[in-house]
Length: 120
Image (tube, rainbow, N blue to C red; front, side, top):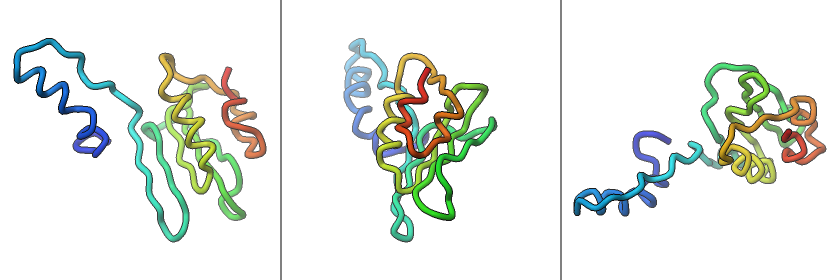
């Protein structure tokens, strides 16, 4: 996350050293922000920035693994997963692409289908 995530500490030193030596260097990649945690026996992952937009649920939070997807139009902006590790991998690939991921909302809401199937 902006402001001191450990991932930045892994990727930033090379850029900093080059800048201190006056050598040209590409800035660190601006990867998708993310947070992972284990809370009360559940695996949580948040990828992207869940600001505004519409929320689509994937699965039922009352009965098992689920996810909440934040959309701005048809573009996936963020996803919060609870006990859905396959969605985490798919979301990382979708959000790390060169273009914002455009998804079919109906397919994305179907917890029985792989998240990648929703990509247009």
